[in-house]
Image 1 (cartoon, rainbow, N blue to C red):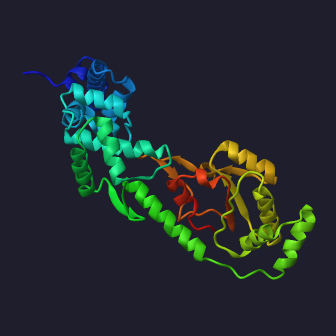
Image 2 (cartoon, helix red, strand yellow):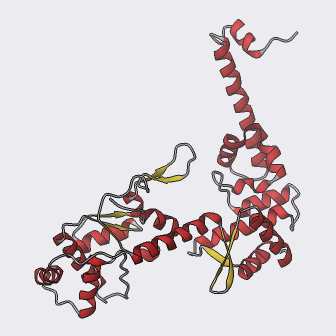
Image 3 (cartoon, one colour):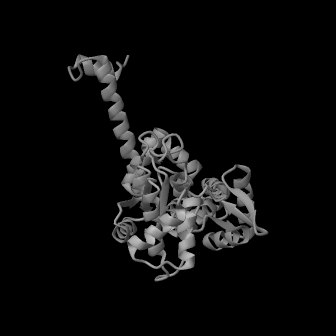
Length: 330
């Protein structure tokens, strides 16, 4: 009768206890499993680090799961590029018009277009792009979109009479953005006592003769829940910004400044003389140790401690960051 490995390890003095022996046996099993998976990945020209991440997620079942659906490698946490995964899938025998391949291509196309700032794609453009990407019939793509919609892996909406498709997280982010914008736009505050005199003080202290439009923008900063300042280079946006900061200071309101990138934040600090940070730093972004996802310390339960937030280069801000940025402040 064969003895168990943990018993043998203890008897031969290789482990001090059966518990220690079991732990050693488990570690050995994991190393063997990992090595076998790395060899499998190497045959298919997939990187070793991807094998490590996949094994951590799926363990000894990894190869079986990948034969069932090779496109699991594109899931969050693995994030393998579509091209490499698609080659791998074809090597495993996945047909060109296989539903798994079509659905993966649809999700890839939507994610890829995020890099160009598109949070959705019109249905017809999505069908055409995926059809060309995979060299499959447009009808196969249409059916794939239908399956993803039915499985709640896509969200369909209508914008200006056009049918569009979203990734769920982007749809949720855009809905939240719209809701926040409407809440802010509807918000208004009574003019503080002596507002016109304070605006006059701002002009006198800065030595700037504000135009009627600039004065209106500074005034509205004191009474509006949302203020958007836009214009080309040299149109006076920085002049208005400094006027607003001066006015908020006279009103004894705490204001935080931020920008999407470190370079933009540095420039904002230079032109205002006030400390500015990146949006991610302002929101205290970090990595959730449990999931590995990005998380923000500042949220609805732990809002920013300020009266106003000024963001430069707002057109560069993505919808997800904006949703967190516009949470209530205290």
